[in-house]
Image (cartoon, rainbow, N blue to C red; front, side):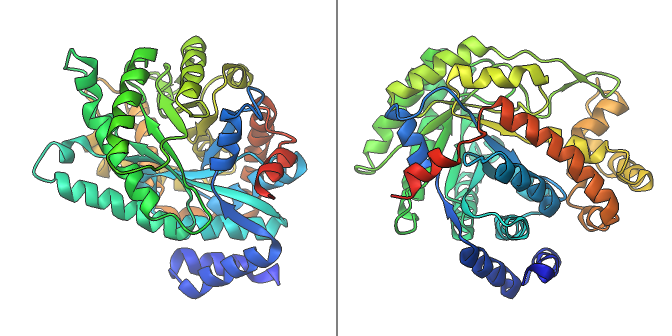
Length: 415
């Protein structure tokens, strides 16, 4: 039955076949794969039914999605990992050309192929409002576009949504409530919208964001002001559940910090701030703080995250780097991609960037345009790349403490 799963994946990706998508979902259900929300798991953390000993990895797969997901799931099965999430950001959906209606069934197909059974969590990461549109005559269009993305994602089986209105924080204002006003107002509005779309029996896990990742570090006072404003606004929509987690800025940056040579520079994370904010989050009924921009950090950092009480950590660029920098990634294809970037993305090059820095920062933008060519890489090469990826997942699952969490997850979801 599973021998033709790759054909179904091909039809979903390149033919946009609804029939193939439906068949994958049907097989997944028969195999015992269930899509759900992290809400119950995170509520249990708030109630101190589990605490501090693991941080949930949220994995963004930008390319080679079927094979990368297989590598994740092999280790999830082997290490009995129950607490892990597959996610994709609004921007990634765009530049990787992976709508959630494709991303979810492709990963479900990977789960079928690996014989996975149990609960899977899909998440909309950084469902972000574009400030330049919000603060213009295009405001209503931007909000409607975000609502459509949310609706389409939920229909695809994405039951975890991270709202990112941190782009609306006005650091030019001296008054903290004024800085956070647009952020908490829109987050509350979108929370209400999400609640109106919940499937029967599912409470969608909703996350917010205090400060823009890559900006100034968040403070306990930022969190207080945001949450007090958010709770006031949310009350206007009735008695509905609010946020279960909150993303904060602690010194990391998306994609890592890259030097003039194109190599990553070691970044520091303010673990003390992360610990304080995770503790404060609990007082507002949330499971803890969320760490973004972490996949390219030094390996010795990862076992520190569970110690802070961070509930979730978002990981993306490191997996992309493993693929593109692998000796098994065809050199001629990489050269073709880099030439395309220099010709077609040159408008993104900053004056103070070297060509190496520019390529490192923008090569993700080539994953959509070169999607078909990347997926045509010989399978023997892809298998070798998958082995490299799997080693990374072994390390992350161990250091983040999520090995042997299958029983914990089953405990809260089998009731």
